Image (tube, rainbow, N blue to C red; front, top):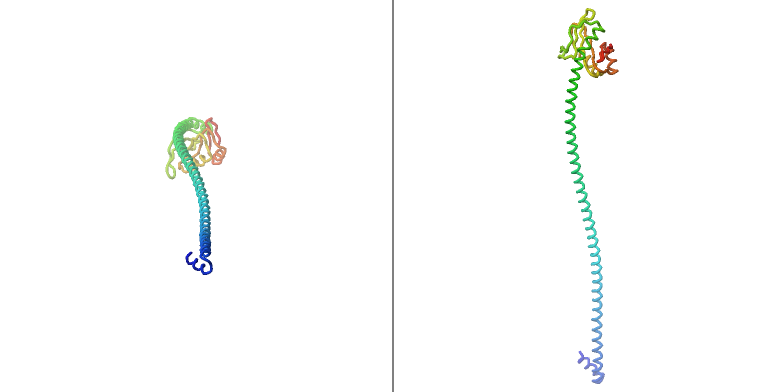
Length: 247
């Protein structure tokens, strides 16, 4: 390139001047090329720096995201730990509940056994008491009727009589004469005479068919006020264990 440029310069300048001008022009050209390459390099470096900045920003964003994920993971693990504790507590509560149910079932079983035993005892006592009351009625009632009615006693005991649809064992059956007329006394012996007991027994007596005059009688320790009123309304009589008589 310099040789061609010098040849052209020599047409207007001396060889020395042409050589000098060619050198100056070459150096200026080289500087220009270098400057152009430097500017491009600067642009490339700037682009790289920008790309590096974006990369660092992205890395920072990823770092933040990773930190947030780590924090979320930590909270999740804490929540899982809480749930694990809750499940364990529920399991323990369930275990205690089952144990309590078993205890209640055992207590219920013991209570049922005690109730059955008490029922047997009460039943036995009732039978013993009922028998004693019936025996007492067999002793007391005939004397009361002899005194109150002038009744001549012919029979006094427990007895089974036919009904319209079967038969029934009466606690107290007394046959005899009152003023020359045959009378049949049918008695119900209870420790406590209630209105419902009176109604039930009077309905039974109404089913008995006998040639004698039938008179219902109740014997016991106590009598309810309503039962007493019903006895009087239905022309029955009541004798207490103390020998008290009322129509």
